[in-house]
Image 1 (tube, rainbow, N blue to C red):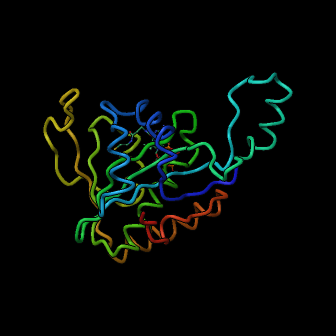
Image 2: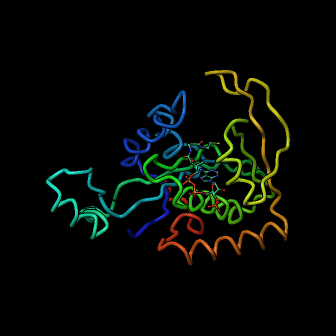
Image 3: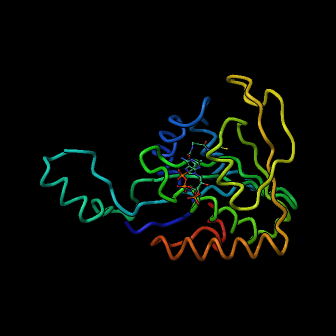
Length: 209
Ligand SMILES: CC(C)(COP(=O)(O)OP(=O)(O)OC[C@H]1O[C@@H](n2cnc3c(N)ncnc32)[C@H](O)[C@@H]1OP(=O)(O)O)[C@@H](O)C(=O)NCCC(=O)NCCS
């Protein structure tokens, strides 16, 4: 797979919304995505694009499936492949806020969520943020472990934060000081050594319409 981290486009919304629906209750509406991509001045939405269409199991028999798998999926004709995961970052004055992050359920545990988080971390640095903050369900140990790896720590507990079931959220934050930047540089280098991915999100300006 030749992975690309890039800004989310309108054409991605269908796939992104499908992942969103499988992860969050309630999911964002289609209009929310359109607003974040086209209108919001503070929003930096990202996707991890696989660069290929991954074949659903046994679509045209095992021979075709096997050859697709060996080739790493069918090349995407328009350069847009299946979306592996996505995220969102808002930059408000000195603060960067991670609004969402998710990996497609079939691609979890392979380092892709970390690529997305690292991309947004890099974007926050590029935008000269002093802090990154986010909210996470108190029961979401997997996401908390990912955030802690990048230096986030619990800052406060928000009671009944999630309207769907009244679960509390941890507010987590990390100050983008010298130590954090050094840790990030090391983790980012490790990610580049482990995965073949191109980052055209973190260091590029947002393409305004
Ligand atoms: C949180 C999420 C994005 C992680 O994505 P992922 O692609 O599975 O994660 P990665 O494979 O990149 O793993 C990165 C880190 O996450 C943590 N992690 C991943 N899977 C884990 C597991 N099963 N148990 C504990 N920690 C885990 C680890 O810290 C891991 O780092 P490591 O590999 O050095 O141990 C993914 O689980 C997801 O989409 N969850 C549903 C949506 C969600 O909860 N989003 C967070 C909202 S606040």
